[in-house]
Image 1 (spheres, rainbow, N blue to C red):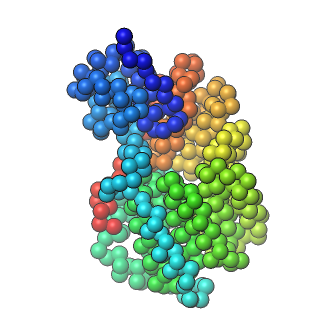
Image 2: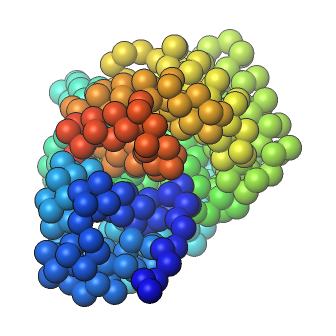
Length: 421
């Protein structure tokens, strides 16, 4: 008698989703486990362990399985996502994915103890550099980090230190965007290094306000890397260190990071309070001096963050409604954010039982992702498909997976050239 198959929960982890998706594709193709194992040049036991979420597949395994089962890149796109999850679980080794929250402590303390005037002296920025940075920020919104990060690396070479001495604010902006791009490529340690380097420039040149934003960015990264308690402390450090000097957008972003961290820890009351403080900040009179990288933050972004908080708290109806609101308010040129919010909206619709609408929104999310090279967008789509997988035999959901097999986006991998940065 054959061994009884383990029941997987696709939303439990990317590994569970990969195993469930692999099994579903194999069964749809009418291929027995022993037959597929032979085609993949592996033992049947290894295939079984991957299908039941007990073993991470190798890159070669994923490539061959995608080709053998005609997955059209659906499995292949999960490769970088699985590598990041595996690194999170291992917490060992030396890879571009290894994030170390304890490395933030000393530099944040240095910022808290800065004894300088709040506003730093103005500098003569290079118009060419500022224009380049603005273009790359826009390209990042539309195409994702896979298209922009290699160009940023070119600016972080041997001449960067001299550039930072001449125009520190612009240099900080380049490093901020590089960090943001590294996050969008799933390379958390590289993002941490970029933020730290930017903070060192801020400390050296008295850019205290910009330093607060960098610390808040580190808090968001820390939260995404599975350390919500540390993230909440970092966000509080930024808020405490700035006091009443915070601008409306800064205050909204920093309180939102606290809210997301509390949601991750299932601390509903603290999350809702922080959400309220973030909303209150946005009702303040607009002021100048916003950090360029977050100057776009508004009601659409507030709705997006609220949707993620509610989803993490298990309040799927509110998550669905807030994601829909975010999509209504978002500018069309913010392609990556629209894909992520559409994926979250589809997941909320799935959780609340509206599979027909979920299927329509899911198809839109997949279709919009075609031009993106974004790890974060690919992860959001994978999480959406994991929500839909248990309903794969429903007509509209089956159509979504067929569409995904023909239009799966490319998940960018992190460039090895970043070792120098």
